[in-house]
Picture 1 (cartoon, rainbow, N blue to C red):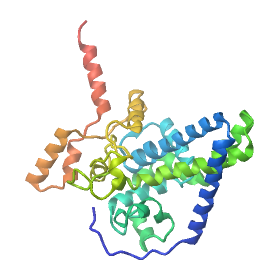
Picture 2 (picture 1 turned 30 degrees about the vertical axis):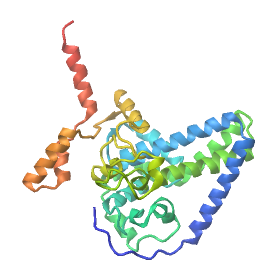
Picture 3 (picture 1 turned 135 degrees about the horizontal axis):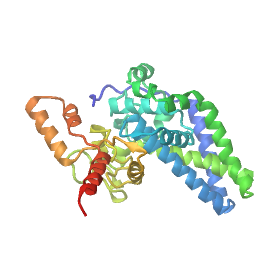
Picture 4 (picture 1 turned 90 degrees about the vertical axis):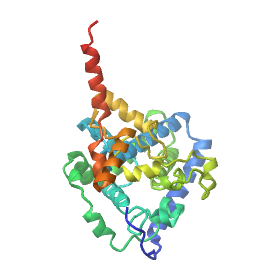
Length: 324
């Protein structure tokens, strides 16, 4: 992680302010309609769409493409690309590069979501103000060769501004066509409300260290009263040390999150391979090697990663060899 640098003044970007005011005002209308008018079928349908969107963001854009935590076959990658498109947050390619930039300069002015500026800037205000003066050059400097070579990512990037509006129209029209939902209700609830909720799921991901993370080496956080609402740990900080660990959850958990469970099911179905993670023993060996040889810790850690899916297959083969 880079050292914190001089604070750069940010100017308000008024077109963004007006856009998000309009989006949230429309979402509140959708929420009102959801409480008083929208059918239960539409509510369930919208929840499913939000879940798909978050799955495309977390398992797809974040773990698969931004951090290469595992490899997925072409069918699963296409599914996750469509799911991510539902959020209307821009192509996977741009999201993944920006997220890599966020990790590269975490907590500095070059970080688009600079956590040292506080929760509200990290969570939302960064969308309303100007970015770092060198932001475009910094993004171009990020290594994206793996993304360039992924046909699904490049296909979605080329067709994004056709796919996103098309999927939005289809998802909004379906309730009125299939179960006679009011088109007005569908536009504001399935459209504006759903997209706004999905976007907030995405934005809060960048504030994980503030919401769910403890201060380093501090067992009881004294910086926030959120400790009484959320379980706080050092797992969010761990993600910034080893971002490729597929088990590290976006929302403060490790090893037991819903997205992690999805990835394990896909691995069992052989849709996913090369899951990257490390155990306690591997971390211990890497720390000893880094301390004794002077090598970079991350380089040492790479030597002790393992694929739990391959380990599972090995166990299955060993069981098959046991005579009955």
